[in-house]
Image (tube, rainbow, N blue to C red):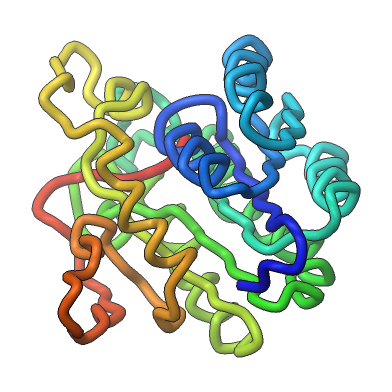
Length: 258
């Protein structure tokens, strides 16, 4: 990416979990940030933390709301442009997650609005700015539930499968950009706890463990495609081949966002 100006990233679901871990890493690297979250308290705490390091615009709101999406892109424009769009915010749906035979369609519509329609619409709104960037990139956070048939994961998993195919098509339609879909792997997050109510998820890796893989997608020249963060270990000093895009999932439901 060009170093002529401060790079700008828009991260949805940036107040906690993977979004906040990535925001911290980018702030340390000199990126300016636009972040959002549904809850204002955690978002303001994140803004206060990061504001001592870099320029931060923190906007509370729902990515399913059009006026909120427009404002996010406007804030990026006010910071000078947009180099990276990270669609990390996700909605799990009912907890515990019901089987599809009993899945309320109104709840399923909410999941798709947050996990599919919102990322697509944010891409549409952000596209002019991403095209102006010398190295525009999109990171859509997915899950192995998008590619594996786990019982009880039909709502969330099908929404992530739709996001993955949309990402695949966007990559084909926009060769001028890098469009990644990345499974961060199993993480100790609030969403993971909601997905497994009553279970102890403290043995899962922290979100920070997935950040090095995401940074490789942001900073290196890997082609558009699907990646798993755990397989994107920092490269050895000796020359090595780049990891290839793939379409398979891991052994248990993992990933997500927010």
